[in-house]
Image (cartoon, rainbow, N blue to C red; front, top):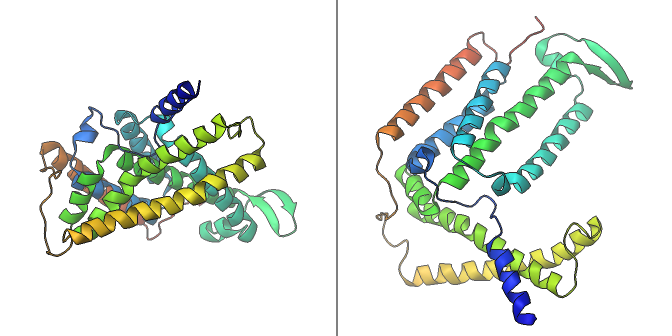
Length: 290
């Protein structure tokens, strides 16, 4: 029975869908160079941060969702992280409304009261529209982050970072950190399954506070063991002379192909056109209340 439990535990742990980890698939997005995806990601985030034009943001969401579907990213790979992002997004929107209930009115230069809520906080069309733009900005960037992480091999990502001028020691550190994500998840699920095999309920059947308390009992030892593992790896790399020379070659580096150039040109043109369209009237806000 004990051997059977161990086999089941290993099966459940290995079959667990890892969050935000690279998974090789046969799509043209996976075949793109890491440099191409890094350029797209950076320009996409910069454009999203600089514009509040609703029309531009909606187009960006549509493009991102199409790419998300083409990349065949599984919902299980990103669902938990997306829920965390959604929680902080809601928290941010509520905080904006409580602390600055008329920010939208100041931006759009008018005040259309829909209904009074409580002292100093009337619900206005301008504020709702401003908060709507804040929300959709999350949805322009979050899928792009997911796509970038799950379609880019960490080693190739490190080579890409070094290719755009970032030190290879920093690039390699980022690659190792990305590679540790699935390892940490495996360790976490292995420990959790072992705890459940001992009769400690940690699934959704247990109460929320009990789950938090029992999960925290796993997380902290897991973090310390991970730090020890990182220390061992860093010492081994240092003993082998890593970082001694200014340059290095990369086994996983991909050369730019025709599709890479097409994607880079499209990204540059789209982002430039979006910013020009946003600022052509001197403001980055689209005002439908004029």
